[in-house]
View 1 (tube, rainbow, N blue to C red):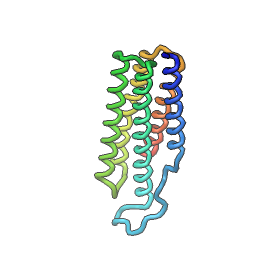
View 2: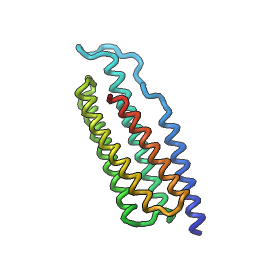
View 3: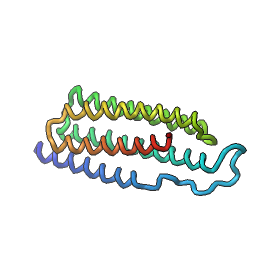
View 4: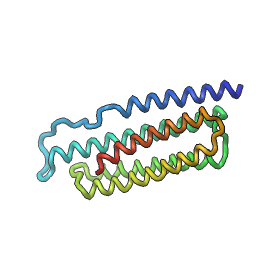
Length: 171
């Protein structure tokens, strides 16, 4: 029974990873042309702002998939209730908080995405990077199955890719 639950959990995580990969390879720059820009705001700034918003949305989506995957693995018995499991969930929550703070900051300045705004968002994304690294180290220590470790590693790698994409727009 435990083996069947583990297989179901791993299959669920793999399907989440595949879904996230599909989302990650979507179009990053959604704004093609804008008319009526405020004085001093360029089309390039608007496109960069929009690309950053889209990238942060991807980070949020991947983080949600990661959280769901970790919980599913726990429910399947593959990631037992332990300090590592609790730490993994707390770290995912911190990643959510940093992403939400970056998104809120961008919503406050939708007409300008200059060097100061990019620097602030980049700082927030570096916090996410630290949490992702911490998550990778914490979560793998609590998982005994090598297949499950691979599944969690794939989810963390997807989150890292989404975060790096968002960070590239903030440079």
